[in-house]
Image 1: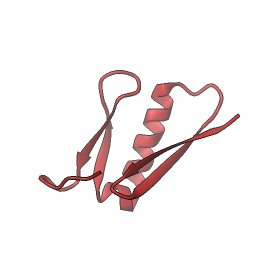
Image 2 (image 1 turned 120 degrees about the vertical axis):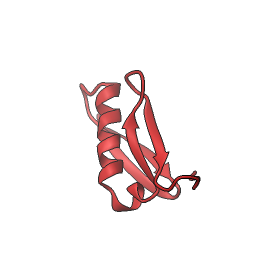
Image 3 (image 1 turned 45 degrees about the vertical axis):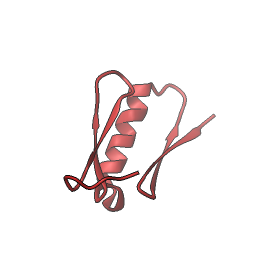
Length: 68
C-alpha cells in the first residue's frame, strides 16, 4: 500500500509517495530531488543528504533568510 510523505517548506508542500521496498534513504533521496527540482521550494531552500540514512538538510536559498 502506497503512503504519501509530505514536507512543507515555508508554505510550499512537496510530497513523495512511498511504495513497497523503498528504504528510508530512497525516500530521503526522492524528497531531495523533488525539493530541488521545484521552482517554488528551491526558491526557499536547497535540500541535501545529511549523515545517516534518513537525514535531510535544508539550507536557506538566501543567507540570513529564515523559513518555516
